[in-house]
Length: 342
Image (cartoon, rainbow, N blue to C red):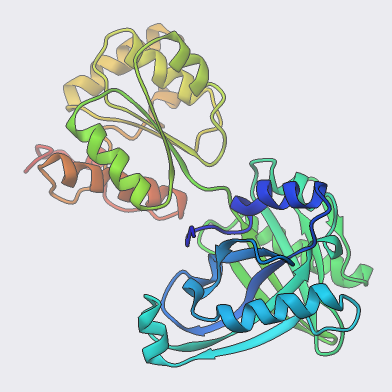
């Protein structure tokens, strides 16, 4: 069972079950108290026959969750679609959670959710889900990005308000969710972000350590070698992609960086000394990349953590990618005048 799956990672399987006519339900957390960090991102989808992907709270509440899913799928019109679970400290520790806690979960049959939701989630752009959890009645879900809105909350005024709040959330890299208290109940508004993808160009111990560390963080990782196919592939990078170039090849290193700068990648980094960075900048300008674009490169790449080994360098690079993704302005090696390893 993949404990890191959120709603977006489940989309392919959800669409498969929907097209096959397999009854299934999606389970998400609305409120979480305790348990430790990161538990809002979990989600699971479960069929009437017991097939399951994803996890909620590392599986510690699976008995209650499975029973709720069975009730909802057996009586979609009558069964409650919210579930309050409480877990004590020993039960939480047995499941790998930091401590006990409680959570309010929403259990939604797939056919009750907007049909175009899955298309929106598959787009590769950040999407906001607004879920109205009423004190009496079934949850309603609205999904939207910067351009498209699907689903309904049953009230035009409420939908307008939720979309406004959600689009503010999309513009704020430091916030992922908020809860509105409204007359019918509460609305959970949360961003559903594509998994960060790290594209690396080059080889060696630093790349090996970088690939291992990025995968440990749950990122998608795509190592690439020097060459024209890599340059063309990088041109298609999207807004959740980070590109890190370690190769010193005089042609393919600058070409990969130029391609990354012309893509939608949110992060472009390059390993190497300051002299190497200057040589790259000259080659990039020869490729028609202006000084303003060259300045977007994080080079030497990495936060100023004082690392020396390949693993420590990889940690500094991943930390900088995470900081940029989160909108944090932290001291980097690019900003320093002292030697990189001092």
